[in-house]
Image (tube, rainbow, N blue to C red; front, side):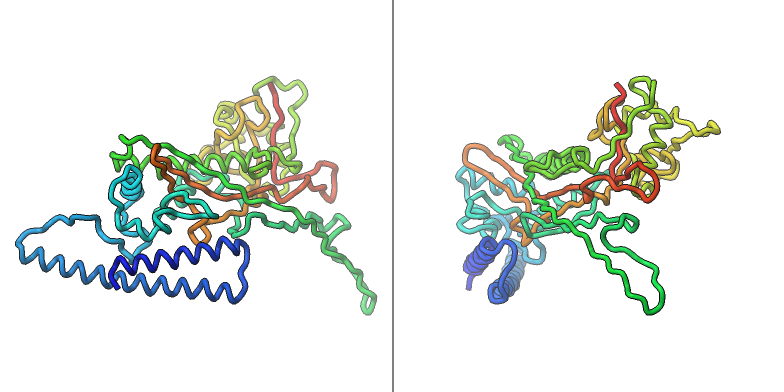
Length: 422
């Protein structure tokens, strides 16, 4: 078989795999799974055959070039390399430029032939465009988690292939009289029973996307295109997900902890001046946390002058700068716990300008590019050069309401916020 025939065979098998995934989005029978695995094995064998033919063609080209005494430029782009997942493309810019040439009626780059049936990527019956090579998709996903620490990288995330995850919550406490309990008992006495108390909750996995139009001028400038598309799209998606974790409505997006019933709001002090933060605010927030040793302060940078004025009773500062370069505390420490500044938080004086949160108290299921077809992909049409990156994620706090302590009347939670002081 020629390389073109091998590529066509691979394309057909990839289409079959995608069809199986579309028809079996959550689970497969043993027979279907075996058929899927057989297709994957066949594709790997085709990859090896294509690789061998590519190497042989390269050797022949090198020999011809050496005989001519000079290196000749190939008339067409290089064939896909099969030893990586980039399909022979150096980066997103080179890939996008090839897609653009097809969109304006130019010749199709041979490296695009393995990226979709009939030249388009089909997902759930659509003909969206060319599927981004796996290596580039993974790079964009990685960029979403790089840089300064953020909520998205700190919450309790879990990969899933489903569009909805059923959570089983056990919100019973050892002292509450419900759920699993322990008892003292005499020898040979009848054991007391307790029962695991669970409550089911659905957590839907929603789709967030960045849909970008690129001008012809930008498409012709590959370095700028690569930077703007990869970095820009990842930053936009990361911001949108972090925003949902913080204050999402729960309708068509994750439920943010600021909108959840598990949040505790600490009131301002009697007679406290507007647009201020006092030490009693901080201590009362601290004692309302369910897990203060694992929590962080999440604050708007506008409150920084107020932090510098906070003092213990012995007049020592409650806020300490980060002199050790600890990555998780770019804003220093308040009562020994790290501070992270974020524009997600409201400005000084409004509710949420200072929050004490335990990120692991938030559950976030993610579809992390399952079988690669659920990851980001590139779109185009013939009038506008459009690029769409999609990411599927859900989320909600583990607690449905604050927890009552063994002693005392003040409830506790993973998420504590300071009320408005305007």
